[in-house]
Length: 84
Image (spheres, one colour):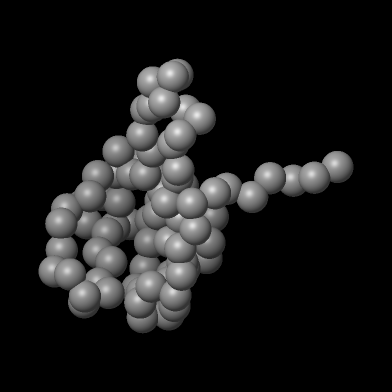
């Protein structure tokens, strides 16, 4: 299950992923989901995993940041938290 959050139009939808050709930078939204995003839209792609309670302390999320051509700029293994 993959969640897509479209920054341009505010659409949020759940879909699935199809493997593409590595290194092309292509992101393709197919089927009925294609009506919720247009070429050039800025989107956030989020995939989630269920982790058993005793594995939570050692679990490291993977956040990947890309440029306009979907080339990886960086990655980190923590989610920032808001401080009071």
